[in-house]
Image (cartoon, rainbow, N blue to C red; front, side, top):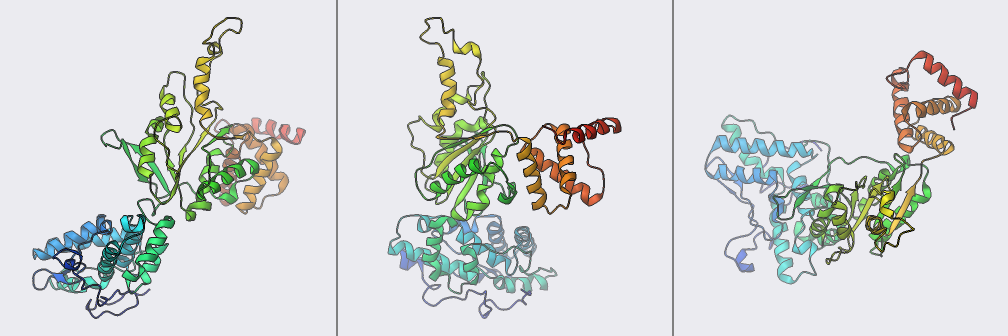
Length: 495
């Protein structure tokens, strides 16, 4: 979209504009039980320094409470105080923050549309709204729609330019485009008419605190009453389902359980247990590309933070999305007592688990807690407490309703995984050469697994691009390599 010339906000008629709608933008708070007008799109400040007035919002308040919204409010305050340097600085800050978001087209409009579409409030996520609530929502949307245009800053930019500054328009700042219902708001001329469709999209998982990102991490903080808070992960590990090969039955069990969960049917917490590098974590991460559009979200929880699970569930309660709390590499040593709190958190506490939360954990230990033979007791002794320690430790794994086992691949499966990954990456290597190099890699890099196969393919891809020899290890030597090649050739492969 080409950059537009600044024009008077009241007369701008481009398709992305949101002109005042008669009967909506002139609605006053008196009509809603207050005396101050809602959603004014007029400007304020000293002569020659005019800035749009931040609207008073009843429901969609978070739309202007993020850093760009705060910069906009600072810009208005500086304009009202006729502080030209402060206004120029606030405008530059607003520009920088919108540029960091990388919007294409009208960046200010795209930003407000995304914030509005993602706002979780009593109208978007609550029960069926009454007439008063719906009227307040429509009034907020009218105010935000009137504000959502780079053109409303046209007079201000002209005034700053006259004072010697060079403010750039808030357009064409990147390649990012709004997604979901925000894209509809960007194109809408009458935002109030979008109120009920916006609510429907929100209830389908497209709004609220967890609508913008798909992956979050729980960060413990004892200073907070909630014991911690959720932090978005803007760039999650990009596990592509097409790169997963083998273990079809195991992954199918996880996928089917997740599908039932998303449909609101009974589903179980899942423990993915098995040898290292067999794809347990990748199986969980690969659920997001498949089900994020259906409202699935992934929340990473450290194993030492498992006692925080009830607090985390409380934070996710009543949200429209469905959450898998992902705990990677769960295992406890015998002296670690966190597993006792984890048992109650998973199942056994007095509080009910929200219906929109499941726990998926991975582990290299079937029973999660280290056991000792001495804890099993002497079978020949009449000890009524023999094995109590073992039962207590086993009870943590029993909290998971579904256990899926990932065993280390045999040589044939390993080579099929390698061939599949090579095909996905479009690596043109003769089959015999690929096989020989893969088997040699396993001897030098610690055995066969899906992870080893991926690491081999990454190294091979780099070798093919730069022509360097495939690194087999820092202690490699020509003599040892010759012996290895001879062993591989003699046996026709490594078993």
